Length: 91
Image (cartoon, rainbow, N blue to C red; front, side, top):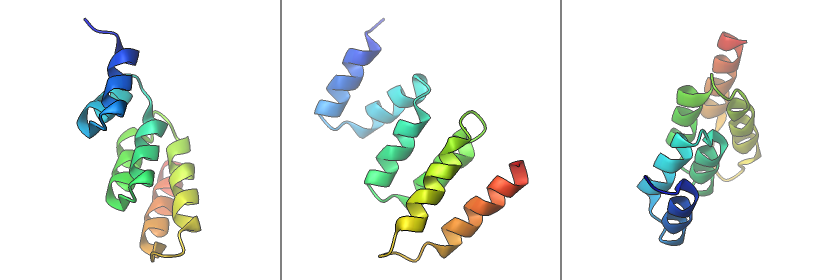
């Protein structure tokens, strides 16, 4: 056994991506996973995170929509359309 909070702090200090993402998922910190990908401009992973965890936390879709709608330096129209389609599909 290990202290998850301490493990998370250590992973963050050493920027150990795989460890951080694993612990975020294990602790149901889905918005933190999304935030990580947003900070790294990993557009594909943002969408995939929403698809994977959007049923547990529907706010992920809204956060990703806000992220893509504010991006001026990147053509995000297709991402926005995909997100809106998913929101409509799952109401």
